[in-house]
Length: 322
Image 1 (cartoon, rainbow, N blue to C red):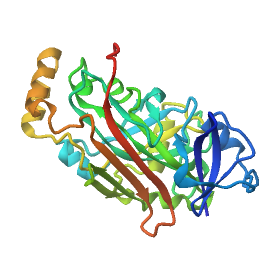
Image 2 (cartoon, rainbow, N blue to C red; image 1 turned 180 degrees about the vertical axis):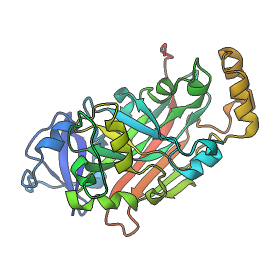
Image 3 (tube, rainbow, N blue to C red; image 1 turned 90 degrees about the horizontal axis):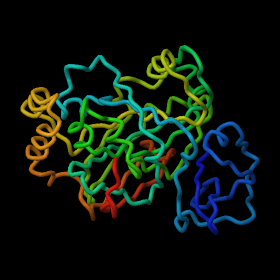
Image 4 (cartoon, rainbow, N blue to C red; image 1 turned 90 degrees about the vertical axis):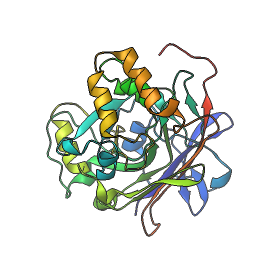
């Protein structure tokens, strides 16, 4: 059975702990990054003398340091359908999200003042166990040799920054600060239980209305095949995270008319952005300050529980140049 690890703030310091039955026991070793935790954590590194109440802790992101955030897009059929991307179902869309976007599971999501089309995306994150520096073949049998942990993430996205900018700036639209709430729990799997990845339930509520509800069994491009593909063109380090994609239910809903709008104005940035905002009724359906999100990922039997995220959308105080 795996271990549930959390990171929390105590007396101004970030502390790692082991969560068991609602109590958190601090680790005896201090790890500055998730990568160091991956390589150094041992089950006996637990101080059981002073348990903390999990519910009372100020929880931090368990993904910390220079971990790469490697993302999959359009990886659920329901999301492909709602974005009118079904014609490209054979392609495994891979992109990056900057680590500056990471924040804690209870932190506010900051909407830039010039963003009108802010969206959510619940995703399962896979934390890497070892470095990959060349082509490898990852299979279901050896997946646990490469994946060390599971974490809940929200791939927050500014759709107008993505689709309203020159040449469709996905990286910029997904890498704003606070655009990747992570945690609260980093579930470290045993090497022989990697199959649990394929049966986890994802749920996201916006203002207590269920918006996303799916199971990782529905992933189109599975983690083993995806890691094999990624290893062909880039390095992976221990502690890096693969965000496996979001299911249907996001706020951006495509249509043939919207697709034609993007295609016809591909090289006219100002007009495309203005048309997008008008098309979506000035962004009224998208996230606004005061909106509240709740996210959960767990196994159907509840044995694996990645905890709950609770975030409030707030307006950026100062509009920095993006």
